[in-house]
Image (tube, rainbow, N blue to C red):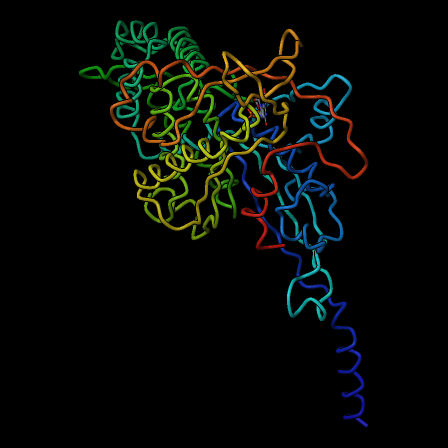
Length: 468
Ligand code: GDP
């Protein structure tokens, strides 16, 4: 009868339960950082090690053997370039290993996991698919958020005064001051100003300054040569009518905000669940106190971008979505012997704490650590002048020679670097903190072995461990 049918059907349904696939879950992981921070190397190392799982003991799901398979899949967004994992990995692990080409624009990669759930449900539930969409984008684009609530006049004034504090700004500043914005717009002059301003941004970036916006001036992509990138900050004239240089510069600045910055936040940034911000802390320490001070401010600006509900423009753009976890990671930790990693982490933690205070940030879970996406050195001990030094050893970029490096001692107390008294100083500590650049090391990977790294597994556990 009917009831018998019903019972029979439920029995079938019950029997089918363990095989019922739960809805696939998707994590969108943003990877950002200023150019050369190590985004490309980080993603390549992370994906290679997740695919192999041989070197990920701190990733709980991997250690518990619950990850049954990991594979690459076509990404969900058809119009975003694919992150070239195969090309980058071949470059880094080939016979003559090289560093891959750095991030120039946004790219994406989907990595899928088949996992067995933990705990009570593990026997009843079947496996689950978790898709990790990794979205790589330049940190410079993130800093552009700050432009959304500044008018052209405010932005120009801020930018010119920042330039006055940086030696790289002298040339542009002289040109801009000699310019009269009330005169009629002339395209050749606008182009010359934009070119000089762009040259300044590149020089400032190379010198180690963090805040070098507008971000697309450094990484223009297909916008190169367009009017949205052909403006520059000018001193405000007493009056400037329609058709004046000032008026046209302001119009282009507004177009940059409306047609470049806002779409990026709306289309990409607003959809991120988890975020890693890579920071070249060692590089900033090496450059000196002012670069580190600049980095502190920049980190606060970055956190401001993730602050929910306070920036009026942003909350209108991102409609209720919220980033759940943010990891600030100091990269290139393989430049230091592990005995100094706690110091590097302590400096990064202090920077993050301070950035949280400055940005009055609350909401997401925030953490700091030091890591290396690809380990280019091995550790060693050397005796010098009767003293035992913990060094790292590797093949130098350029000459290709083997060298041992002892970069100097990072202070145990980060306040020694970060106290207000240091901020105006030109030099650090007792001696300079020296760094060398190493080429990626040749490694003979056995099957199922990811390339060597430092703490990528911990980073992965923090970022996605709870969802695996
Ligand atoms: P991106 O601009 O953020 O994509 O930066 P990249 O990932 O291209 O890294 C920039 C450069 O930093 C590389 O070419 C390497 O020289 C160096 N680098 C990045 N990650 C590491 C690392 O884990 N170890 C070492 N030794 N160098 C690294």
